[in-house]
Image (cartoon, rainbow, N blue to C red; front, top):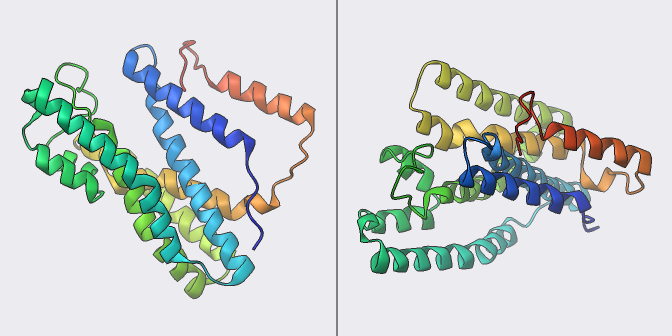
Length: 252
């Protein structure tokens, strides 16, 4: 099977997403759109994972789900366990006020359900700057990623085997993504708990889903490797302009 070629802009997008989140943490009032780095990560994950799977199905008619699961475990869990262990050790020694439910937090992260734990325990993302910020707060994104990695190979397998046509798969995934985005908007308008909306896997799926949709209509194998400098310049300018809103506030 032909390997996917490296996309040079991918690392740049990841870097911009990280910078946006960092700036938002440093000064949320000035960099109000910094948290948008999170859906950027989700879109990239949905795109790359789906592209890899669909390319394998197109080339060989199958996909090695076992290898995918093992590779995700080897790639993610060593870093996750390290962060959990070091953070727990720091809390135990220097910040004992955060010891409450520490065992639950660690277990929820290991099981990739920490975002649900945060919803159930009333953990606020937007009020965490006031005092006693937990070092685990932002691990909710890894739980959603973990849930995605668990179920997505199964979903893609079922779609490929039962739906078959890429066009129909596209519309199914697009419909699910649209439903997720609409659910987020409706829950917000109905004044549901903002943290339920922010942490929810169902309300966050649209980012992953849109990435998957892009993989279907714009697979890496079909991207033009020879982009004209003129087109590159136009895209770069558009990207720079999009960093600012009408109030001239950076919105990474």
